Length: 131
Image (cartoon, rainbow, N blue to C red; front, side, top):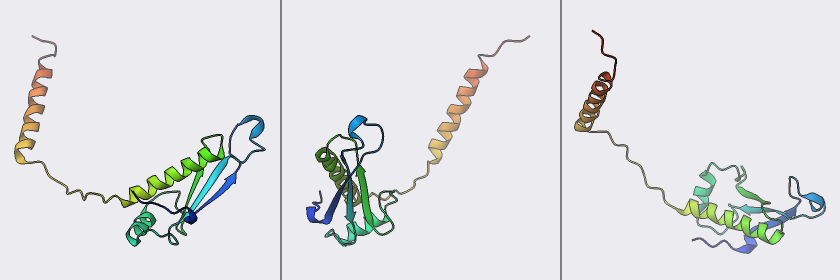
């Protein structure tokens, strides 16, 4: 798990979208979290992996922007945004296993075709008998 220093994260409170009753126009409970990948203290490898991710939350400038508005309080939304940022950074830290494409063997191909022929014969026996 990678620890992100708090001084590299910028929070700003905004008004949440959607219906919310009387408070929606008065209280800024949603949180915008901004994290600049290039200016951060992360290792160069993790920075590179984060910038290569095809994620709509990462801007062209290399800034991660996460909007959290699930909860009614700023504190919970801030914790939610921080948790989502942590998940994103941790996912970039995981080294993906390289998939080696394989081909089915001749025996498996033959067995599959034999099963298809056998299944077809069983279905043929279900047809009406005509004389």
